[in-house]
Image (cartoon, rainbow, N blue to C red; front, side, top):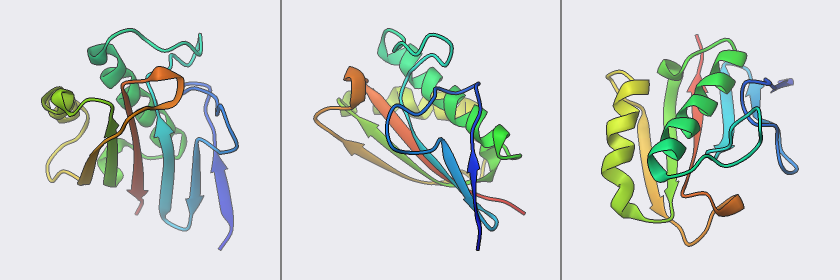
Length: 126
């Protein structure tokens, strides 16, 4: 199956050797997003703003793939402090509808650029 690279200026440009997303067949793999503002490429301040920015970035990439976050079947969340997990749940409820995708949440020591949260997703189309 051919791979299709998904890219949008409405999410941060890749800051490494990866694509914003890759579509293979009816599956779209969204790369991890941190709370970078896509215009300034600067990290937004504070955990609340970073959580929202992460989901806005994922949403923009999903839309570039011709989908929405409702197509998500799996989401992975990485937090530098799991005390913020309740805030993630609260914000996710604004971006995802039931039935919710499968999800993992992992506490990590560090994230790129000093981010407090990162998330990636897998979308199933069709």
